[in-house]
Amino acid sequence: MIIINIKDGESLDKALKRFKKKFEKTGVLRELRSRQAYEKKSVARRTLVKHAIYKENMHLEGKI
Image 1 (tube, rainbow, N blue to C red):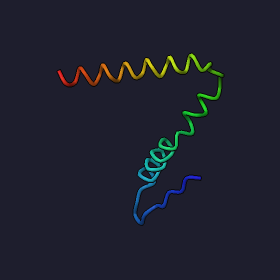
Image 2 (cartoon, rainbow, N blue to C red):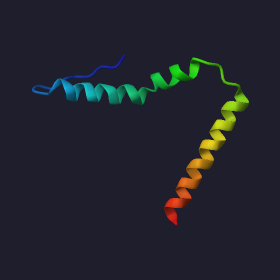
Image 3 (cartoon, rainbow, N blue to C red):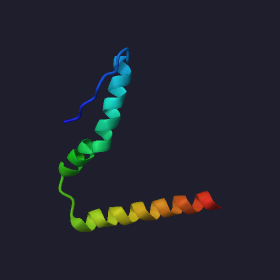
Image 4 (tube, rainbow, N blue to C red):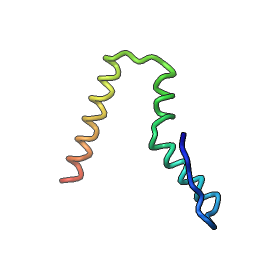
């Protein structure tokens, strides 16, 4: 359970923004979406490799 302490004089919008940020960090929504449909291990591994290649290319482009 996520608990957000609202400070004195803090607007509801700011508290809601902090709640959303904490909720996003937990990864609940991401896991829920991944569990909606079964993904074979080979497909999941392929996706990880593609993501790693993409990150490596982005890293190399930034250095040049």
